[in-house]
Length: 242
Image (cartoon, rainbow, N blue to C red; front, side, top):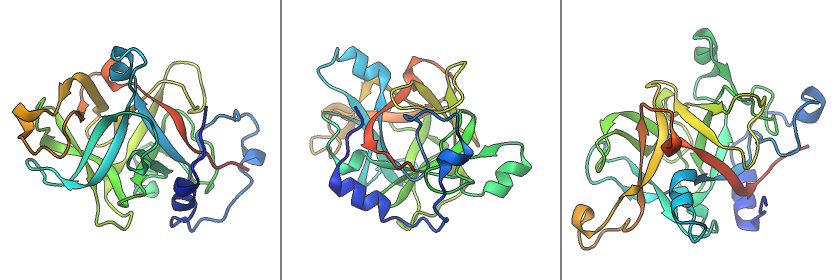
């Protein structure tokens, strides 16, 4: 079920979209009603760790205004267990950092028709964290626990970043659009690696210290394999459509 949360809705709709709103349904008549759309606020559930918990707990992509104690020192991004009620788990779907650059390199940038445009499989998106206005980011720095590629929140709190914020939506074979509750991989465009987490890679007192601010969070990383550890789906959030 796609839940509407009034606080999150105010945050997401009040963001910095300068694009003219368009009746996207007129240009995309084949888009299903449950398509993920530009400008929407979504919460991403990690499939593998949520499956291991056998329904007792779901782990969602999250960020908060805390910095990594190693690596890049940028804002923390983890997967957090619990109910999808925290605004720390909300991400706004946007087009890529530099759409023209992506076009020149034969990629398909999302959101070219503005807010409410449905996202097609294979398109390039950014995910912006409304609570802190940084972007989901990855780069060639090792992650603190698994020593894979670090994932962080990048930017100065104004929604701007760089091309390391761009992710390709990789759907299962067949569907044309990214839809709610469908399992997808998010591939980091610059490195080719996939956003992932694992139920076995968790912050605890031994690896994070006795005053660990992210105790029991899962490390989020980018990895070279497109496998079960990189599967995510959208279950809740605020969906914008016309």
